[in-house]
Structures are given as C-alpha cells and as structure tokens.
Image 1 (tube, rainbow, N blue to C red):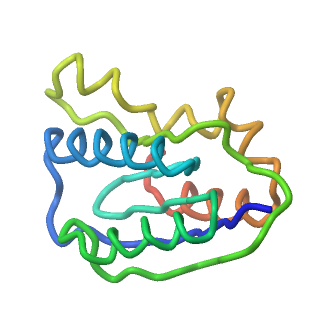
Image 2: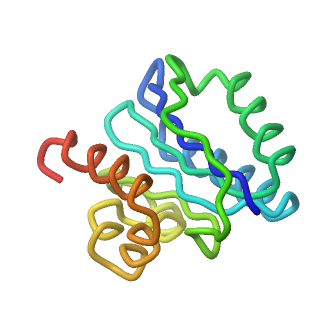
Length: 143
C-alpha cells in the first residue's frame, strides 16, 4: 500500500524561473531519496501537487512544504491509501515562462502537454486524481 496526498496552494508572489528550477531540483532529490512519486503543476500563482509513497515520507515531505514560503493557503484536497502508484516518477510541469533559458525550459514538462501526452495515461489510472487535475486544468485560462 502507498499513501497518496493531493493539495493545492498559492504562491504569495510570482516565482521566477530560477526559483521554480531550484524548487524542482530539491523536490526531485528529496523525492528520489524518499521513494515519492507524483506530479506538481504550477500556473499563475497556483500549485496542485500529487504525492505518493510511504505514509511517513509523504507526510515529512508535506511538512517541508508547509514550511516553504513559496506556498500559501495550502488546502489538502484528498488523502488515501492505494494499492498502486499512479505515477512512475516525479515530474514538475508549468506553462513555460517567456524568456526562460533553454535549460529551464527543458527541465520541466509543459503543462499544456501533460494532459494530452504520455503522462495523461498515468493521470487516468485513478478517477479521483484525474478529477482534481482536470478541474485544475479547466480553471486555467487559455490552457
């Protein structure tokens, strides 16, 4: 059994490409170490994240997120134990920032493609998770 947590948060200010890249590097390192998979999506001051892994590791990760000044108004949308993981790895996606350098642009998945590319099949493995991510997608103007 794995534990899955879905939360939403807002950024108190628009993060720069460098801040998002730093966040992603730390998240990938910590999540790889802790056996956490999932997806973080960001657009226009709003984050949605799916974390899945051992309960204690997911909760420790979430506690770090609560302390991170990049996240405000954190709302846990869903928690559950599940038999299988939805995501095979950890990914962070956002609509690419204008003027971001090539390394930053390649480090992230394009949020506009997440719902239509190979990751879409992973999202559809769980109806609840798919529903939250689809609601997030529909709330984004022009996406």
